[in-house]
Length: 107
Image (cartoon, rainbow, N blue to C red; front, side, top):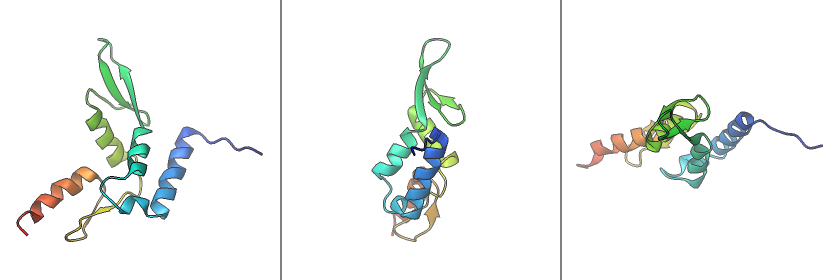
């Protein structure tokens, strides 16, 4: 018997597998995380025929892909924990981790 999953169910399953295997704890950049984020991002055009990036989960749009990718990472990816290599404090997004690491520049 072949079971068919919806796109949302598939994303939840992949997120859960990545969290359970702790693959998302390893590094600030992981191909698995990049692939998961990209699966939420689509490109379309607005009323003026200009390119717009869109979150496929909730419909949020931006003219910059970076903004939508950050939105997806912060709002739709569950269980992501990135830890600071200096103090081990955990963060939900790569951007918040990068911002935090600035406090350790003088160490």
